[in-house]
Length: 245
Image (cartoon, rainbow, N blue to C red):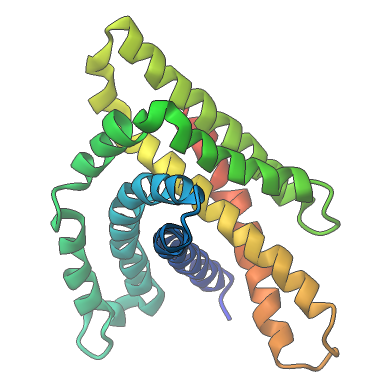
């Protein structure tokens, strides 16, 4: 019941559910590559481009945040969190290796900036940003989520502007700046993606919730989607803008 602990639990919920959504989004695009190939559909190019772009985000951001979430879970348990009475201390130890499994996450961020961002002449990155922009445009007047979607829109603009900055550095011969900022950019892209998918879930959840009776048990599930999305939008997405400076 402690307010600080409730906030920590909401923070962990938002990150875990948002990252899970990002992983499912990647898996969806991978499935659609095979579907489109089987049909001879030209959309396979789009879906494969999203697989390529999202892969370093899923690898790096998911593994970094897994450790951070376990770290926070220990704090939730207080002094008992680092004892064997609860499994979170072992989870924290186990999750640390994730960020070096396939090369350090710094390498994943370099892959994003030096390869994936420029892939197909920047078409894959543009398609990613366009997908998010369509959601923003369709929901910016949402009666419940409009404020949160405003934060998403600002983060979207910051990521787009930073991508152009990277392009300017490459064209201007300032490549030395890229390794210094690539990890920050990967975090920006990941948090933008997570914020988008959480808000998409919240919008769907609010629509579903309105169709249920007041005492329906699923009401709490859908309310949780709303609070997780709004929390992430208000507390994490503003940092995307700061990271672009």
